[in-house]
Image 1 (cartoon, helix red, strand yellow):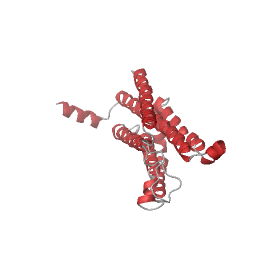
Image 2 (image 1 turned 180 degrees about the horizontal axis):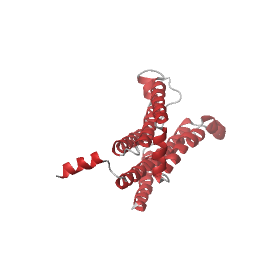
Image 3 (image 1 turned 45 degrees about the vertical axis):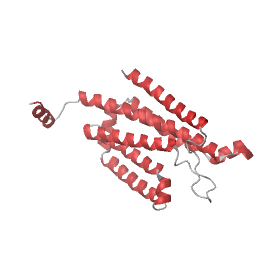
Image 4 (image 1 turned 60 degrees about the horizontal axis):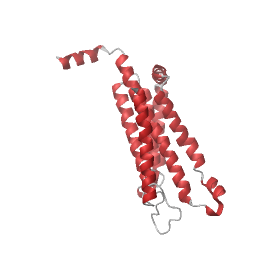
Length: 227
């Protein structure tokens, strides 16, 4: 029934996007894409927007799903920890405004750096197991979608959301909220692809777990539970 899931993904993304667009058209400013936090704030921020909140929820969901795979599948654990760790790093990155504004300036960079360093150290230490996990599940539609989401998030959106680009195109008609809106909606589709890829990876990992031979200790534990 994989085709049915993809139909649901399509209509889910379409419905979410339609709701967001309809809300902003019907009630301008509802999405809070440019919020001025003080009288001296000239640029405004989109960190309080509905889209940003959705992005945070998506990253949390991805992290939880990858944590489930890491706990349930010994063979896929290194790969799941890698993507779960990346979700944590990106979550810290998305919260950078609140760390800088309400805790300590540049704290998010320290936290992201520590998390990234630990993740790199883990992957280096378990590189062989990581390669085995990838070989067992590849080709993987889930990992392909995660890669597509990463390309949109960390290449396409950063370049298209580049402020000088919009200033050059719009000239005197430039308004920063246009740049913020385009950037946030592009990031949203990137995160949605990341979420779909994570869900598909979970399905594939679950199917792989069912085909793998279980260790004797696990078989004994399951036997005791049944009897």
